Length: 283
Image (cartoon, rainbow, N blue to C red; front, side, top):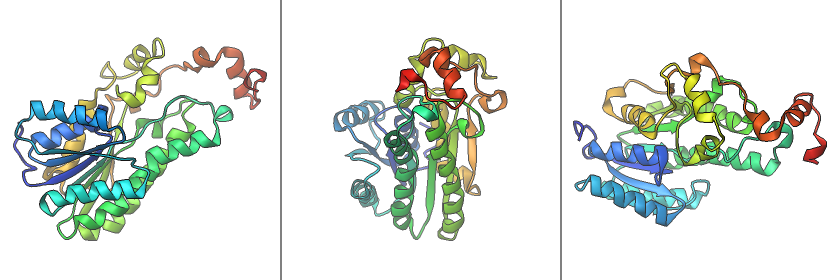
């Protein structure tokens, strides 16, 4: 059960019904924090809470169903977390990801905005509305970025653009809110198994290619990321703010694996796209 270093603290974790968010909620609760778990689907959220509660019978775990891109839903979740003990110490905006690979010439404006909202707008809302509730004692906000920010991979333009914006948001917000004793950092996962990456793992051979391109020899699991989030959320990292940390098995060092979009779209289509032409088959 850890050293209970977060005893008496209150946390809000978004995207907590599965994957990285759920793993973060568990580790924070294991170390003593009262945790409000937020996600859009109430049934999945309740199931995740019940599973964690069974494993951690003494933990304080509550749920709040809502959309992290909507101001009112986020504000209601923050208020619920703050009401537990009259304080808010930890925020983990773990909602993110995309739902497909799209070469830029095939991506719709609608999908671009969807990815931007899911990976950047929602975190902005949580920081903006959560920071005042952390006063006067301060707290820690730990966001989820991606190693793809410093790598090149076709089909990820909108996702990487959103996460690059997220990393700059983190630095600017950390600078502005340092006087309030609010620390803001992020973790850069490498290829990690979760609901958000299910569409990637479903492509034949993708997991094997990423594992082969990773110095530590495997892709990530949610717990790998949650452990770093827990460190950044707790007192051990009390002199750390405005930073982006890779937790990726060394994927940043090795680069992305060989391209596999040709398998999804076909060699002829990709050749046309790389030449800046919209393929006839896409029209």
